[in-house]
Every structure is written in structure tokens, then in C-alpha cells.
Length: 168
Image 1 (tube, rainbow, N blue to C red):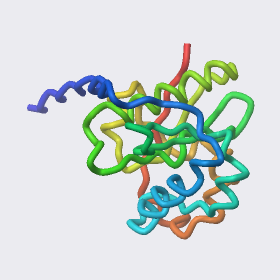
Image 2 (image 1 turned 180 degrees about the horizontal axis):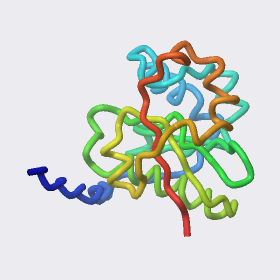
Image 3 (image 1 turned 180 degrees about the vertical axis):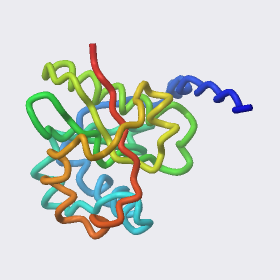
């Protein structure tokens, strides 16, 4: 007999001290350091300071008492698809709902742009499931494959999981 799947608990409510806002050029250095830390662990693509400066308008940051503790960006892959990228959080801030707050802010931006689909490639599948995404076959995203995957060192052995959220 098959075991009944466990329900995915809802994402925690964000801590009241955290705020989410659009990134500014003053955030480039903390963004770079946070993304680089993830890249060193092999779980995020690195971004140079120059790239971050050029793409700063795609980023949101979470901060507590003026200190950047999390980030994420939204990259347009087509007329009807955006990707959540560079989603990261300081280790000491995990489990407080701040990551969900960042994803919600990115989702609002996708809705504002009238883009119906948000995808991500991730190792943190449960996090995305808690935030309304579902697992899909990554081959349904040729836009992603031709934009980023062609330059990735894991191209032929990608172990990330694709997730998708359809917006109303």
C-alpha cells in the first residue's frame, strides 16, 4: 500500500523586523557577497558586480535594521514567462518567512507586468512548493535553456529541479 503524501505546510509569516524593497546601487556589494557565497557552494550561478549594477532594477532585497539579509531577482524569459533568480538568504535568517516575502514581492512584480508564469530552477523544492509552485519537467522551458543553460558547467548533468507557478 502506498503511503499518503504529507501535506506541505504553509510558508511561515515573515518576521516583523524584515522589510522587502527594490534594490539600489548601494546594495550591489552586499548582493555580490551573498550571491558569491552561494556560488562557492555550487548552488547559485555567480554574478559579477558589473552584472549586478546593470541588472539592479531586477532585484529586490530583504533587510533587517538596514542590513541586507536576503535577495532575489526576476528575469524575463519570454512574453509569458519570468524566472526567479539569485534567491538567497543569510543562514541566520532562514525559517522566518523572509524568503517567502521576497518571492511574494517578485510575484507581485510579475503580475504588474502581466506575465502569467513564474519558474525557477532550484534545490530548495519544498520552499517553492510552500509558496504555490509545483514541480515540472525543465525541458518545457526552452527559453531558459537557450539563455543560461548553454553557458552552465552543469549543462549536461543538471541536477536542479524546475518549478512553476501560474498566476491568476
